[in-house]
Length: 275
Length: 210
Image (cartoon, rainbow over all chains, first blue to last red; front, top):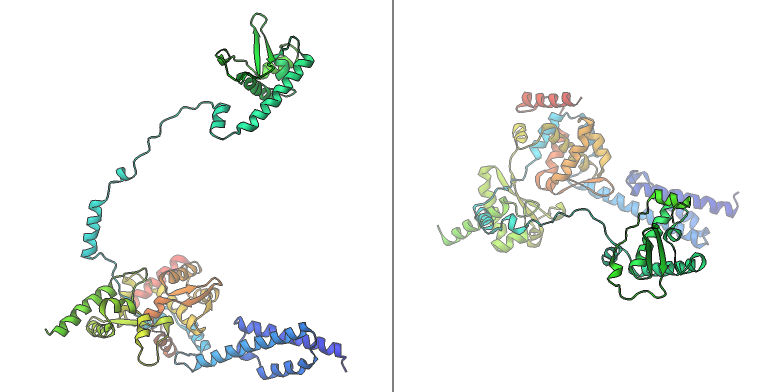
């Protein structure tokens, strides 16, 4: 004699199996008439009084729902069999397997009445097309070739990049301000007469950093934050921070002073051979 | 010629132009299109045209919506929703079929695919159809052929790779006749007409692929 708990467990398992079977039928993997509906209904009825929990009642409802789908499939099957188009699928498959290609072709040609259609131009559409062609503007007028001037490779300045919005002006100006403050602090510490050797200011531990500092220094000079002092005879270059940046760039500042920041020069500076 | 006869002759010409020349992506003309151009008596015009086409071995074929032919006389509403085509009334010989661009084994493959889908109540997994075709066609050709049948509108495929009969099969193939002929058929090794020539072609094709 099973306990009530075991009975319920058994009932749930049976309902699960019923649902799985119905799903297989709905997915056309099993013949709908494989299911004995009366027997299934008897099982569902048998266990129904035992269901108390919402989950159990849900399972019961789901089983009934799928059972209804199977009955619908059975009904469709009966309807299809009663139509004049019905032929035994197994017999048809068997015939298909046995028939040769030639036989299939011969049968198909008896039942095939291909559509007759014309895709040729009519006189009317031909005249239309000619009219269209006459009014059609030549390609060279519709799509004029773009005159693209040949541009030689060159260099772009920071200003140009800022103007083209590739670089941000604000960030750079802030960076320049910081760099100017650094120059003033270094000159205060290590400089004399308000200036310090150019290489001592731009020189850094790595060559890359040195080049970057030289790049920023060039802007300090160009924008009037600092000035360069060149002693040609001594071959010495000094940088001198200005107390206030020059608001207007004078003609004197527009002179370009090339300073070579090569790897060799950087190494010389590291060895103390360059001032 | 009486005025009435002249009117119908003129309408028949218009109907011929509409039905023979492709107006849309798919061939054929909807009933409501014919009604708009020919008037509400377009079924009568089509009847006269069909009668005239008999001598040319052509016919006006009516395909009702969703392929469901009404049991009795179709209503005007049903005709308006139907699609009309001009099709061959009689049969093509194998040689003629070849001349209009079909290889014989491709056409036999189409027949097998259609019958197989009919036997499965109008729906069959593509892999099952391909398995059936690969019994008689070289494997590399099977997929290509199914694609071709789909492209031509004989079959359609859903996103679950299930194949169904498409609009062209409904318009061109007499499903009932096809299954009846197949069930009545007995094993036959040669074609009824021009058999030797066509058999030779198939053997050559197969030997090329093997």
